Image (cartoon, rainbow, N blue to C red):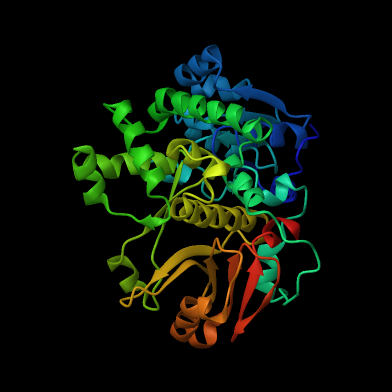
Length: 410
């Protein structure tokens, strides 16, 4: 199979031209090493998955860094937190741009003591699993078009798409190894991926007494993806202390398995009193944990509706990496239970995104977007209702109904 082009490559190249250390973070098996080595073939490559290399770096960080070539990729850097201070000293002695490319399968910004180790010397980029646009080998410009106000109403001029084609995309997820396999083999890959992650990578980011409980919580979160996070309910269902559940959730976030989407409110102080939503990042993993296949689309509509919402959130967060990495993402829910699945902000500028699995949409479906627009006033820049149909049309105000396929066809 021809390698997938990664739009984040352009951002990585730009960072290497003016920054001493560039750190490429993302889930294990998302393509970080492939991207780094393909983009910079002249760099030496060192991986801390190698036991001897790992032991050397941990026992003698200074000697290890001194022995490195001038241009080096250091893979799985989260396994050697001892190295960060030594890298800082090395960079302070030689500030030439692009000296080190670090890759990590854990979010260093969420690991105590590591997030600011190279402050002012390092740029952090996030590589997600393949988006639907990358899989379709398109540029992934939907988010840019939304922000720039370039989305337009358009009556469908093609045959209606089969709903199962959308379901196939959702259950495939975005890990390159999984999408290259048949659905049955992909589920096997997902299970093995999670097993290795829980047995090995969890130890790199936290102390966990019961790895089996970590796995059970992840299965429960998959069943509740795109729902409000209720830690007390999870604690009761699993017979775990609330503090333990919170600790495991932090582990999932560090390993790029789970995303907490905080609530949006006009007053920042009030955002804290409403529950976040929880999303599994990769819907392929979520579908495997839920036991769903594409053929369940018609009989498991509620669960697929939640999976679809998580799918859309992930597509747009990933596209932000090469569109505008400083965007912030939220969800909206008010006292009347009116919701907007995804709220995007840039400063005070605000956009809304609603998701619907049906093949039809009507202006009344934009109720949440209109409520959000009322809350934002002149800061509201527009909203979209993404649905499984084929035509784009106005919903009133600055809102449009847009086919979901635009996420990967633009």
